[in-house]
Amino acid sequence: MATKIVVGVWKDRLTVAQSARVTHELVPRVQPGSTVLGVAPAPIAFTTVRRAAAGTPLEIVSHDVHWPAESGSYIGTTSLAMLKELNVRYCMVGHSERRRFFCESNDDVLRKMLGCQQASIIPILCVGDAEDDLHARQSVLTGQLAGSLRGEGSHNLDLRHVAIAYEPVWAISTWRSERPLPTGSEVRGMLELVREIAREVCAEDLPETPFLFGGSVGPANAEEYFAEDGVDGALVGGASLTADTLVTVFDAARAAWG
Image (tube, rainbow, N blue to C red):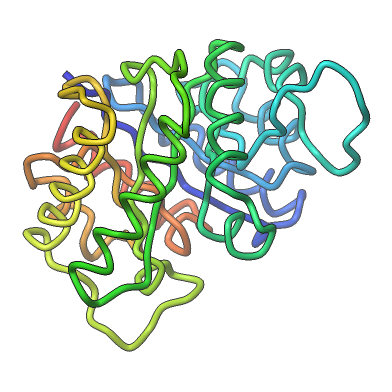
């Protein structure tokens, strides 16, 4: 059975002080349970948020990591050793904004996935598209999933310890278009497509791989989305920036899955 995961992704939207304040407001309201509940602060706020959440069920998730290298200096990056030292258990890789603005390739993402697993960190692979046409969407997702999970060779990626998050670019809160947000059944259908493509490119059934949705998930739709079969959690954007709205999403997850 796939683990259920809900992460509030703060990106660079909260300062260090704001991140600390929201964490202090969250901590007494996050209850232990079987669902993984976390936040992903900006790297500069990571240690502050971790300290504020110490000893609580709240997971601190990394936005990104640099792929392992035997030598060399890579300014402005976060290394696997840094995440290990802080006992980080989850790390996002391949977010659409990393692909779009930082020119990350599928090969870059695969190297990060492999590095995370070597460090016993669970990578949350992000895939997404901006397509309306189903054939075009399938093509984009097949390329991202095949390249980020398998690449051109044979790799030792353990797919039992990977989460996959589908974020249609048009639905991400930062880039919201005028299109209506998807209904619960539409989200289920989107994740069914992603799951089927992942099964095909990996030649595995993936029963233990969580499939998450990211795209303006918030208090108005979290309960509907989490009630759908095949929805194993969410990456929460704009609705995660205040404790009240994020707790509402967390509560919907706990009500759905415990």
